[in-house]
Length: 200
Image 1 (spheres, rainbow, N blue to C red):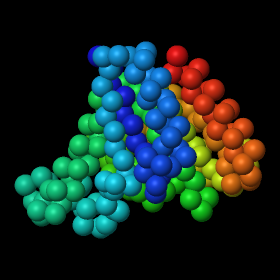
Image 2 (spheres, helix red, strand yellow; image 1 turned 120 degrees about the horizontal axis):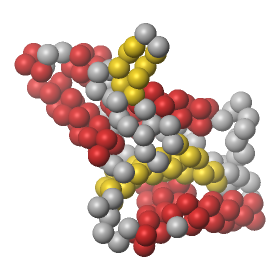
Image 3 (tube, rainbow, N blue to C red; image 1 turned 90 degrees about the vertical axis):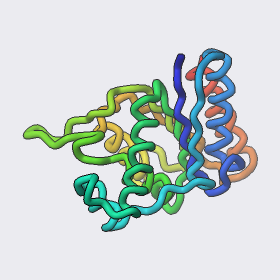
């Protein structure tokens, strides 16, 4: 049985543009994998706490020496990592806020990237421990940034997953959503067509 991990990060939760693209993919994916399991993590309704010094020190500490708060934070981190490791496929709804990823998604990244757990340092650089799998990123943007220096998301997300050992990362863009109704509709239609092909 296949498992699909779904991570949405729009401030508007299910009403967000990126979340709507994700839902379209899930619908198509269920048709192909009727027995599959879909695990959803909505970072707007259930945000991951921002990384603090205490949380980070808890990741590094001996489990028997962690404070209660550190044990809770590490348990959440362990859960997020297990979700990622056990998934056969991952889909991420990723809006662009002020030229970057949503802070809730950055917090998810900070809790997942743990030396000795999801990657390890070697003489040749970081080595991923998660294992490769398809990751589909649905990037919804008000303007047009793909292929320009202002697109800080694509490189960051691909580099992050690459450090964990995940090389199969594909972006599907819906850009120009704030540039007028006709352009927005065309962008959504193009993204939907790609999603349908991807999930077929």
